[in-house]
Amino acid sequence: MAGVRKRIKKKKDIKISKGILHVQTSRNNTIVTLTDEQGNKVLGGGVGLLGIKGSKKNTPYAAEVLTKQIIQEAIGYGLQEVAVVMTGVGMARDGVFKGINDLGTVDISYIRENTPIQFGGVKGVRPKRN
Image (cartoon, rainbow, N blue to C red; front, side, top):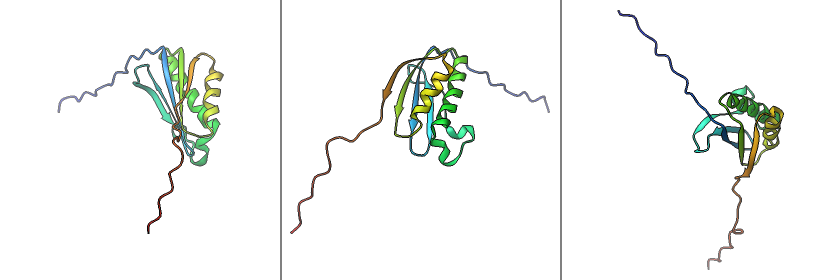
């Protein structure tokens, strides 16, 4: 049997100076995704990656730790400026901004709220059947 060669995966050379941080918060979990300006995913993950389980996944502390981890990795790729897009309702919103501000090396260009809200009023009363 000839020598079997192992294929070594080459890491992509990612250079990103501006990125968009998508934050999805729900009542049970927080997911943070960093994309480039075209929308291609660079880094991301949920609070479960940190080993946090149960109801603690929605806390601001968990979101802060996750955001710090993703931003520190992205700084290695050359990230200097980030935009934040928030989606959903949850307690973890404040933790994301605290995590970005604690690092201090990344500037926030804008913050956008992307949570869908109900509009158009309530459903009308159905007519009686006779």
